[in-house]
Amino acid sequence: MEYYLYGFAIAFLIVLGAVAAKTGGSSIGKAIIRITFWGTVAMGLTALVGYLFGTTL
Image 1 (cartoon, one colour):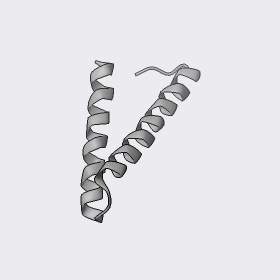
Image 2 (tube, one colour):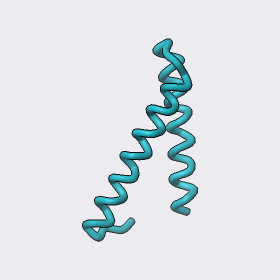
Image 3 (tube, rainbow, N blue to C red):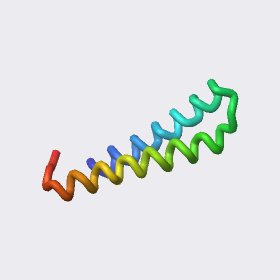
Image 4 (cartoon, rainbow, N blue to C red):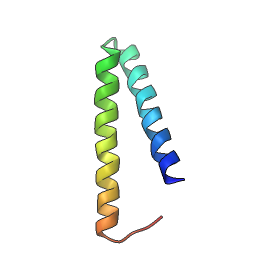
């Protein structure tokens, strides 16, 4: 279940990047990479902090 959650989150980050770029009139490819990369980094850091403090879902 966790893998599906992360997979769908990344897929929606890709869609978010494309929509934001299209709306703003910028490069779609760069926006997808930027939003997906930083969104994935944020999810990873959040998971790391949760692990360090011993929290679970």
